[in-house]
Picture 1 (tube, one colour):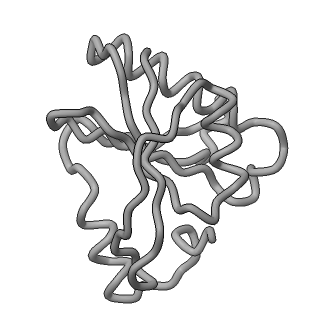
Picture 2 (cartoon, rainbow, N blue to C red; picture 1 turned 30 degrees about the vertical axis):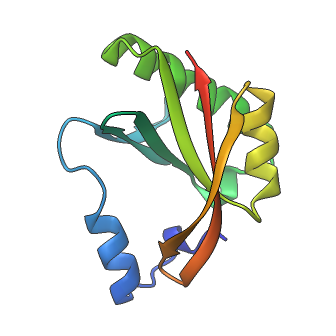
Picture 3 (cartoon, rainbow, N blue to C red; picture 1 turned 90 degrees about the vertical axis):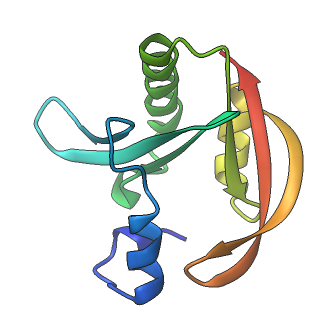
Length: 128
């Protein structure tokens, strides 16, 4: 699930990384000790969507909710957003529980391309 953070430089992963925004809408997140926590990016289209990733060794420690709340507050204030959406792999039940705990609602299901081929996604959104 967290293969993004390994050292695999497959063509699929390189293309995935190249799809990230390369302007002021992409961020790398560090903690107060200057240690990498994760990364995030906003896609400012008709609907504002985002991607957020936390280092695997930091997951399952009760930090995800605080991490995501801080990002949502930052995005709301910096971009004056009213709502936001995300897409998550359908099998990622832990992430879906986190998003639902922060009032994200399921709005759609679809097949999408990943570095491992076509997979099922869930689209979720919420007001900010």
